[in-house]
Length: 199
Image (cartoon, rainbow, N blue to C red):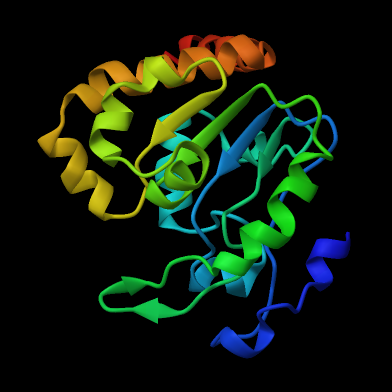
């Protein structure tokens, strides 16, 4: 894949270029996130960190399902680790989305739902606005977009302050995913059957 050889920002990246992306022409769900962190840069696997564990829990899917590229694409706004800024990671390199995003999305004609994970993805696609209000008003962006906070450790604090997120937003997210990917219902049923057998 041509994008994996990209060196456009190589001189500006503290750990050097290592584009991290998951995609296929058959993907139906796109996760548009921020940029890889250091653990993902090291592994080359998107969301192979605590934030990925949290995102998978939000989605109600297993790691095997999450990394099923035939159904789920993961294309962050910045494909390489951008370095640090203040107390957190720096913003995604702006050159990246301009150079690659439309070219990559054009190769996935079957996309039906995009999870806009974090403010950088939301602002790029929908324009600047408040993340909390967007997440609360998620239904206004369906069926094409689903805004979510970034699943960093800070999101646990945010979720405690906004209990409607777990009560209203996450059940709706899981429902949308299962409408698009009906096989998830079958997997969930098999899991329930196995659990009932063990009881």
